[in-house]
Length: 278
Length: 299
Image (cartoon, rainbow over all chains, first blue to last red; front, side, top):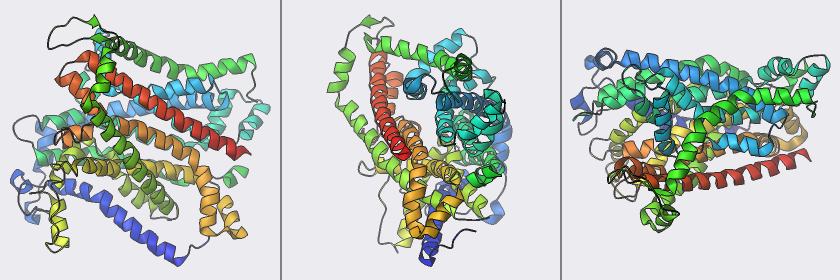
């Protein structure tokens, strides 16, 4: 077991966690409560933190899902985010392994990979739009998956490269001596050991794509309408539908929460050298 | 093992190939097109004709006070904002790593800000910061017993940029936290325990074991945050529209204005290139530092 920490540290820790929780969760709670308000209640002074209990209803949720194409939005965003995350982490892990273990292309090549992520999206959006129009893939799931990969593949490569470099190389060497192929060593030794890194990379590429707005707005029309585009359309007219936007926010946060709850045991389990010895 | 035999090289290449092809395919055209435009004049409000103007666009940027203002604002967000995210994120990760079975709940709760799309949180914060109907100033007033009246956060040139920064800190600290936590999880428990048994104490083990092992992961996290903060656009677009005046214009927002409002494509491309160069220089510095640290670790 771990050694007990000094008492003063435990008290300070508790206080800091409480303060952090209030700071990070207040806006989330505000969004949740706003999603049950009427348009009038949003602009009252003093502000209404919690709408009266008897008025709570799901009107805003029904409105967003049924009338404002929210269901389609959730479906499209899920397809795009899940596929982008899967592709980014898979090809990212392969590339990261090559960069970390074979030093493929040296430092310059690694740098080129991360540099593709540095270009301002505002500037790359128009040329990309033109190519995708030429390829006739605008307004499909693939166009967003490809466009989002520009930012997410370099992210996954670099994150995972760090994790692989921290692993002792001896384990893979042992596997190779026992006759495994390089891919076999990668698959059976390296990947299981960098599970926390893989999960972290998956979570963030998923969330980055889930929340992406500019490409989604530019490159989709009718067949595909990601949630962020649906939400922005709620502020398009003369009035901003604050409560519906909040309801949409609560809906869009759900898959991320599920991903964290489902995957976080892999992060928490972590890996220890001690476990490797067995 | 990973010596230079021919088969190994082929394997190394095969591993990198999918990422290489994908990135090359989607980055090369925008890059070349923008580079071409940066040396041209293309004013879409005037005519669709493009003419070569040499370095004029770059010269214009260097004399453009609004460009420098945007650069300055961006640097404030990058330097101060990301530093706050780093300290808070690593601190929280250290706290969480000490917590047992309730950690699932804490971690999930603290990760919520990252999972809310900026499009959504932008609208929430517009109400939260509002000085008439917003809960923030209401709470400040109530808690201080009416003594303190909060500023009009987004409408005052003195607080608007700070407000953007705090929102960015709110959204992205959990990112640094999770990266640091994943890094901490990969530290063998025996190592810290051994150090503590050897009389290093909690803080000794912290500085001598945890921080050095965490550093490579933290540097990568920092690099990513610096790069992304340099591109801050959504929050400015949704919260202030660059105002009041130009007090919250970031360089990405100013690029957007030139491209999508003023339709000055040549100038937009030139500014985009200057940004790219600045980020590349910053990233280089980071990587040199990281390499030094790794080198030091081996000895």
